[in-house]
Length: 212
Image (cartoon, rainbow, N blue to C red; front, side, top):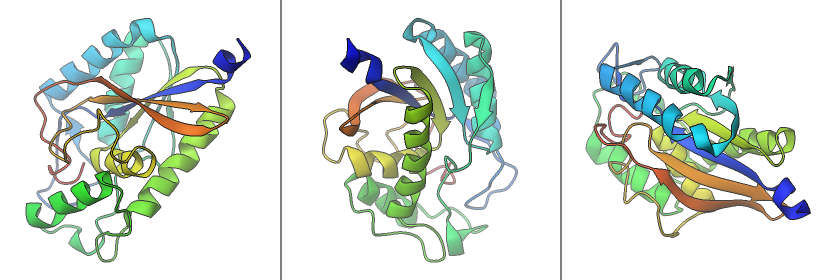
């Protein structure tokens, strides 16, 4: 029983489908589309039986909107945390999205090659490191509870590459992560481990859509 009480679970979700104010890479805004709002409601409905105690999200609007809709279904408030945002695209900010640049980067991070990054931006170690700082704090504050964390495709891939490289159930690549796809993480005295995909919803491109 003591071990069960010390186990913290995180349901890590990508935000729902979003539309953006500009066509440049690294757009920090983004608002949910009608499909994205539907995905967020479905996420909340699917998590009703999971005993979610807290909902946390990045400060970017598309993540906040997703969290607010899901939390509304669950009857919970939303807590915004720095450190869960999408990765910094550096010198590519504002330029047209280049799949030949970003898609290999996402695949490399997922495979655990976290040293690579965009010039002027973050590498995978930096992204995963700040994500883990937030998750470690949540594990301390909510020991034995289940927390919903809403973040972004590239940031999630870097994190999964850091803690679960090669594990069954990971996305195949950066395009294999629909809106509001969820991944289950568990934390105990041994640290974080990947417990598998929690669910998948269709209708959203992967993090390639302007690295969201």
